Image (cartoon, rainbow, N blue to C red; front, side):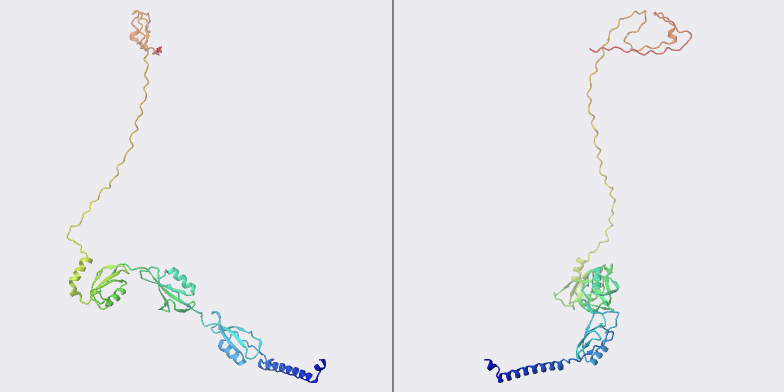
Length: 366
């Protein structure tokens, strides 16, 4: 077996195979060098702060491909000014390599106007500020929608919700200031329904019920009656009802009189004025509380004193009976008279003797 392996034919085939393999590898690397420009590199030029038009021309002259992308608008730089690039300048790349440059846009990216019409002005202003719109002037207009945002103006023109505006655009807003009071109602009798709608809207009123005589909805019918009547005063936004027909108001006089009896109430001024007398203020009666009933006191029976008999004295002594409670003092006139007791009269004076205190009686209660 070894003898057959070292046969010259086998060795020749092996040498040929190795030569073919080496040749294929060499040819492959040579093709890669040619296709990829191996060893051929060029520096990337610096295009920072240049305009996008100049940067593109420089890259094309250098033999490089380019790709332009926009960043967020920065007012510190000029519009279409190159802000960044990749690969950075002074890098060495092969010819035909791609260079990506970032350019400052001309202005802010556009934003969508939000739907804030007929919304409360405070919330509407907040929403507009969130999307990047700046409110310059607030215009107040009479409207029944008080403090509601009615319109958005950009450069004097109305802007509808959903429109695209540059970010940080300056806008004006129209806000309702409330309804106007005591506006005279216009006369639309004799006009067509279409003309009456325009007149009513111009006078800041609204069209209410429109009743056609023949039941149709023809806008060319003539108005022969309206309510409220022309000349009356109402607040802004009130509705005006209309009656229309193909005939003229003169031909519908009977119908007009019938409607007047319903919607035009006549006030009889021939009656004397009603006199109102002032009614005295009715005072509510005041109720005093009943007097307190005295509580009867229990009477304690009093015991009668028992008189004791005293022995009678003779008339000569002149003594008073014991039943008397006090003795009266004797005067000087009476003292001069003699008495049975032998008392002496007062000498040469008219002064009365001091009254004697009555003696307490002894009471015996059986």
